[in-house]
Every structure is written in structure tokens, then in C-alpha cells.
Image 1 (tube, rainbow, N blue to C red):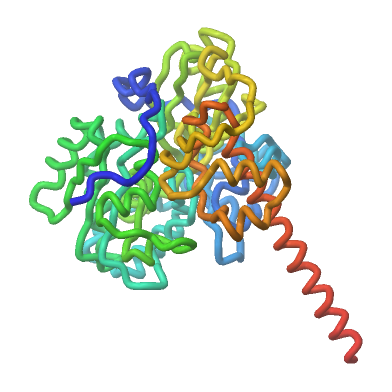
Image 2: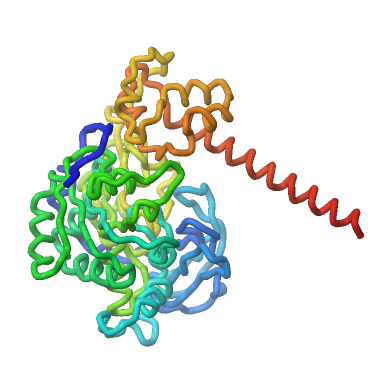
Length: 453
């Protein structure tokens, strides 16, 4: 069996700060700000109005768009406002602000009691869709869509690698609730009709692997212990490590006969299918050298970073950078009022001694970024061409759009070049140009239609 992939790096993982901390229930805050965009796809529209009283699990926002995930009330209380609020990926985003009433009462009929083995595949998919489940490793792709691949697949892979430094939410979940993950794996295997189910775990989590092996006893589910190497948890890397198959350039996991789901997503699917529970909470790691007491928290969707950090004793030192997610692929934040969302795997606060970055210099053509790139690209040339504004050449000659933005290149660069930022700039320009071309073509078609009248 393949145990790893080509390229990658071994950054300081920082997991010792929180990995020994059991999952702790985060108390309800005084206010919950629930963004209407928490998934890949179209934002949802409110189904409630200011002044309405809602119950936990009640549908509060949906969309007619195909690519969306429903949003539910994280607790019972009053809808106080519907207005733009801080968002970890969009700056500002419309949100439903709920003032908890302290009762935390479930909507009528919840939770349910269902036997997943007696349900059809379509009934299971409907339950997942109605629960608003998305990829909880950070990708936030609507789960019910991902579980209907356009091509037959024979392998289901559960991602328990959690290769991003500092984050330990999935580790604690695997250690504390392995049965939920195994049940969810069986549910998904039934839906997909896969012959093989594998849970991939890096070999720096032996106790989690043992817990899952024990829970999987008597099933056909395999536990694959993978070599610890970042970004082992990226879909394409994980598929290659587990199956030896490569996802083709521009392709999707189904092109390699596989579907990958994060273990947190799978546990949420178990709750959705067996109990009818919508996604109203998630496990989030609050960590970093600026946090007084790093913890793994079970947090309601809409809870602010500020409230989570205060629950962890606040800052022990002034942070230089606040991140949504981990240090490699996380996004820097400007506000503590950003809320926890469905894809919020971590809140990271780092001091300047960790984040300090020397001044960028010219590329010295050492090739370290090429050796580290798990996608086999030439990041140095992508950064140089992007810096020059030659975005089409980035795309046409150097495989720009195949970059997964893992950050390995930036990490190993001795010239301290912000390679990933250059690549993101180039991608943004290419996408903007495509949108402009699309708009131009639409306008031209409309003119032609008008002229033909």
C-alpha cells in the first residue's frame, strides 16, 4: 500500500499545545451571528425575519440554487438583526443575528430516531441535504452533492490526516467518538456503493488509529497509517497515498474512482441520518502561542472568535496574527468578531516571534520549491511571471490552476518570497478575465438578438 506522496514538507506542527485537551462544550454566547454564506456555492436567503422566535435546528436560510447548503438556527432565541457582519473569507457578509433565550430548545420533532440500515440511499442523501452538511475540513463543499458523483467510484476515503499544524479537532474526535465515524463510513459506503472504505491517519496519531481500529472491528473498514508529511490531508495527496492512483490535471477525485470526506463531516452525517440533527455546531481548535489555554471546543455556529478566545483564558501575549484555520492554508483575520462557521476547523493566534517574516528577495533559482511542490509544478516561475503580470503564461505554460495553495513553496523558499500570494494573485486575475470575457459574450449575444428583432 502507498503510504505517502511525492514532495511535501515537515513544518513544526504545534499540536502539543492542544492535543491533550479533551473536547469541551463551549457555553452559549450572548449573541450568535450566523452568516448566510458558509459553503461553496450560492449564498442562502433568510426564511425568517427580524423579531421571529426560532428553535435550535429550525431552517433559517436556504436557496433555490443547485449548489448550496441549508442553514439552521444554532439555538433557540430571537432574530434580532439581519445585516452585514464580519466574515472570515468575505470581509463582510449578510448574517442572521440571534439572541439566545437560554432554553436551547430543539425545533419540533428533533431529535429523531432512525435506523440507517433500513433507509434507502436516496433517503440518506435527503437527510444529509436537509441537515445542511458541508465539508468540515475547510472546503465546505455541500456533502449531498459530493456524494452523488457523476462517475462510478469504488473507494471511499475518510480523511483523518489533519496535517495542518496546530489543529487537533479531528484528532480529538477520532479519539473520543470513533464509533460515530465508523457508523458514518458505513452509511456513506451504502450511499456510494463502494467496495473499499479506508480511513487515512498520519502516523503521529497512533492512539487515534488504535481507537478507530477497535471501533471498526468486525467491519470491512481499513485504517491506513500514513507517513506524517504536509499536505498529506489534501485530497489528491491522500488518494495517491491510499490507492496509488493519480487524479488527472484539472480532474476530480471521482476521476480516480474515489470520494474523500473529512472525519468531522462523517460524524456530522451520522447525527443527521440517525437523529435528523442539522449542522448547528462543530469542533474547533483554539490554539497558538498567544492563547492562554489552548483547547478543542464544541462550538455553536455563529459564536464569535472573541468569545471562543475569552473561554480559553484570553491572550497571554499580544498576537501579531489571527488566523481562520492553520498557519499553512489559513486566512489572516482583522477582527475578533468573525464567527465560527461550518468550515471553521481552527482559530489560531500567533505572536510576532512565530510570524516574523524577513524581507522578500529575488528568486535564486535553488529549486527547493520545485522539490517541495506536491503537484509537481514550478512555483518559482509562477511567482516570477505573476510578479511581472504575465498571468496567461502562468496558466498556459506552468499549470497555474493545478496549484492547491498548500504553501509548501513559500515555507521552503530561502529568499522568503511570498510565492503562494503571487499564485493567488495570478489565479484571481485569470478568473476575473474569464468573467469579463463571459460578460462581453453575453452582451454581444444580447445585441445580436436585439438587432434580429
